[in-house]
Image (cartoon, rainbow, N blue to C red; front, side, top):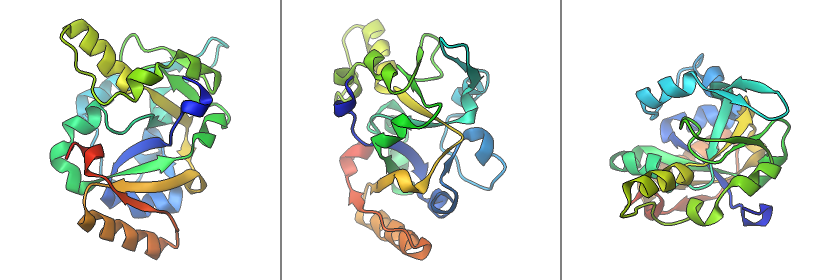
Length: 204
């Protein structure tokens, strides 16, 4: 993947977390667990992520849970599993400028997967298959190839500790009613961001 191929990055979260996020930014799993919030993360996956250390060729390492995980594409296997809850969810879009922040890491697939590799950003984009990341489907007749594509579809940008509100570019929801709620929360927080209604992102 080239830098000019990167679209807005994506953070999937319940709408109920928006007010807190607009105050504090998007916090890492380690930081947010001290705050009241709602999570849609799979518990088994989070157990694996809790044990994962992100190690780079330069010798630096830190726990996966100390990063905010952003997807290249929100219409991915995680969202597919959550499609029945689309009314509760939104996607916060984040500027690709975040790729240049200090300590950002590129994961060439789901960061919890055993064979996923980690690279320093933005150079690590070269290890990302843009065609598969942005593909509409990860399905394939060969189950091994399907698993590979599924992993790549969930490639991540890992931002240490926090993504600041100034890097947000918008919020995507699945229906008009959700748009009205999010628009009200933005107004109450004094934050001006566009709200897009896109059922397709949520598999609807």
